[in-house]
Length: 226
Image 1 (cartoon, rainbow, N blue to C red):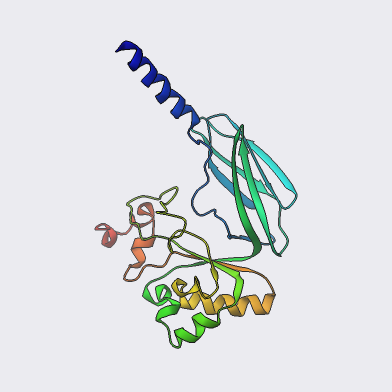
Image 2 (image 1 turned 60 degrees about the vertical axis):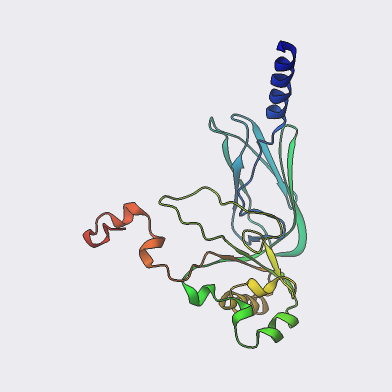
């Protein structure tokens, strides 16, 4: 009996040591778009004090995770690129590889139902969805998760979900894209000749105070209920 318990403890300990400690937040994913012309912050979690290295577009940057395992490094300014490239993040023997990453214009789409309104629900959606042919336009729709305080990350149920994953403006994927964002991205891409990424955080029916930090609302008596 003691031998069995000892073996169980050894197996459990080995399992814990084999768990992945290197992690990126869910906003980073395959097919994402990075902002052109500005330094890019890459951040995540690793073993406390561990060295973390990121490689992208010929750049190689490294940093040490702090005592809580958090880390952040910065890539130099990037030039526009329609060529999908890999972001490789390593720490010790651990490795994360994100593929097909473009560099262009990155925009946040926030608001209520007018922004949340999807392409499939818009006018002539059957024609728009069927004719979508802009794989260089990418979008991610964040899941609706309300919290009383800012969150460091969000949960993605699976890699095929239409929420929390980067998708492309192609017939098989574009129908869930914000319609306003889609038409904006199409025009912007044509004018600037760059890839475009959309981060859709819209949520129909939300009020302005729902998007503001509590500390910002505190000085206003009428905002105390929130």
